[in-house]
Amino acid sequence: MARLRSAPSANGRVLLSRSAKLLPCWPTTPCGWINPRGRRIPEPQHPYRDDFQRDRDRVIHSRAFRRLEAKTQVFTRRFSDHFRNRLTHTLEVAQIARTIAAQLGLNVDLVEALALVHDVGHPPFGHAGEKALDAAMRERGYFFDHNLHALRIVEDFELRYAAFRGLNLTFEVREGIIKHSHDYSASQFPELAEYLLDQRPPLEAQLIDLADEIAYDTADLDDGYEARLLTLPQIRNGIPIFDRFYREAEQTYPHAIEKLKFNEALKRILDRMVGDLIRNLQNGIKAAGIGSLEGVRACPHRLATFGPEVDEERRGTKNFLHQNLYFSAALDPEKNDAGRVIRQLFEFWMAKPESLPHTYQEKTGQEPLPRIICDYIAGMTENFIYEQHEKYCGSQ
Ligand code: MG
Image (cartoon, rainbow, N blue to C red; front, side, top):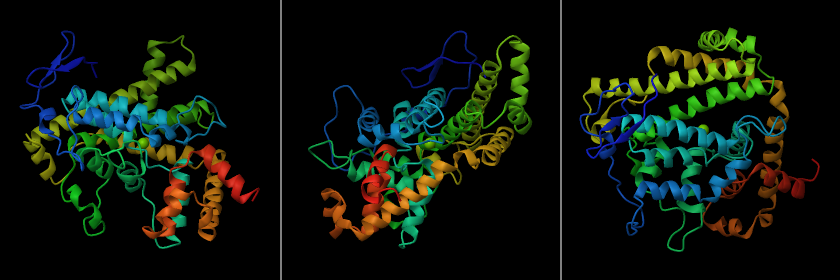
């Protein structure tokens, strides 16, 4: 896809640089479709930052955001200092999502806020940590869900402002935290009723999950190859679109070293997915005759999807990563740690809640003990959870 430089004009339409290929403009700008519904606690307008810009900045200044630096995405630092952690993954998602949003004339600041906050609810140790924490909760009749946990962080746990608990984010950012990746049923989650669960979220929220997948599919191939857990022939055989782009890179750069041709192929996959998402979303909106946020909300399906061909490639890549990387024995030590460390600490604090920090002990009247322990563990970095485990569980 042609690289386009764009900026919203006075009427919100996307202007393109002279060398760029013209994309169809929106009949009315989707950016103007979003009008913030406001915050739980009203605040005066800032003199030069709008609501979504302030939300983005509040996320960046939160502790939960900074802790992402010491949380695993897929690979820990045992493999290399160069691999993505959850913070750098988040920045890649934000970069991809911003590009898509700008090209579509969506609200880039809202998209950036949503991308930056999308993983703050993840516990230590990546998906293995999430699984272990959920298992510990289910044994006690509860469950763990990282989107719901992210909402609790921004609504309650972050303490930065004298006027309120949490970050007091706009409705649209809180709604996006809940609805960016899947739908929650109103009957199962009555406490989320304010988030219009029978309606689709705005396009800004819909595209986050796909930007997330574009980011991690390509990054995991890259890190898997760098970690030598995936080989070039294996990837070329397993992912036809990668093979096609690698052959193109070989023709264009016959003297380049393998890793640079690998990078070229990967970059073209990323570009292909982003371009396809933009085109497919534009076509879907036009085909459905949607011209307002109400139209997006009332649509029976999500409009942000890949086209059938790229979606098939996406599924193939995901399957390849599941079969060849995510369940690789090389990643077992961290997964085993996740299960062992979380389970033992959970059991320890269930037996000795008086060893929890005072701020958590104070919640015992308001929340069940497993939820308090779960909240505490979910917020931990990997450095901190290992320290806690050493302190309370010794060398078990
Ligand atoms: Mg993510």
